[in-house]
Length: 278
Image 1: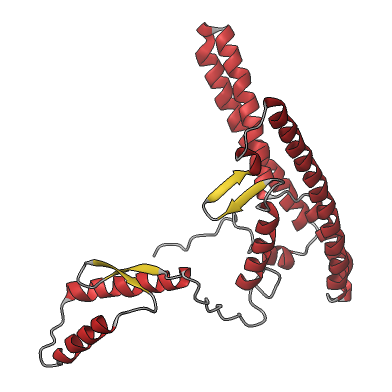
Image 2 (image 1 turned 30 degrees about the vertical axis):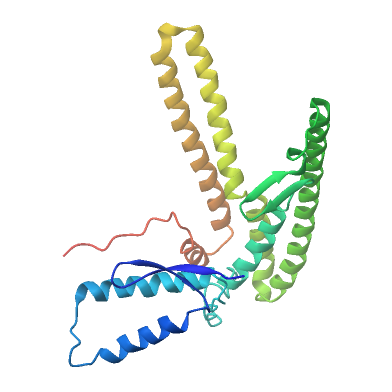
């Protein structure tokens, strides 16, 4: 099978060239043009240079998308943020691929290849009763997967706890008990960002629907409903902020002043004092 890609030439034209199958006539023609170009006749043209840079960039992108191997970024030396516990770029990619394979795994009866995404039941003429049975079957499959996901989370927590015990043993003996309490408290308060956003959105939608129903029953009190919704939003935002502050305070209270200062450096919302203007 022949594959081709679009090459943006430096002159601004667009050509479609077959990869690995350039004819001899075109090759000879290109060779003559190259021989006719001498250093004496060459002149720097900023516009041509700019287009050439764009050409190189696009060709490189096309080669990567065509399946060329991507050189892995150099690993950072021990002691950097990655080595202290945050995943390196390679480890992140391995983890994301593993999660994505589970998330996008074709469902029972699903055809999923490139641009094609359909159910096998879409191909054949089915009765309403048959379609209803298939829908119920897919719902049962979804529920079964959610149970497996919860089971997987419990297993992942057990693995985490086992390795966490080993990690704590590597800390100074005088700090191990405090470190265990610190980690237990932190992980008991943990919530995934997606779950956090989903909970906040669901609460907002429920409150909004309540006040919409109130407006429909009391058309003359629309302004009251809108002000009440604004007040609820402000209170909800402050409540969530207070929860975060209480968690952070609980962590800091377990540490010495110096240790708390080190921890605060990793707080993305910390207030950094600005230098005084002279």
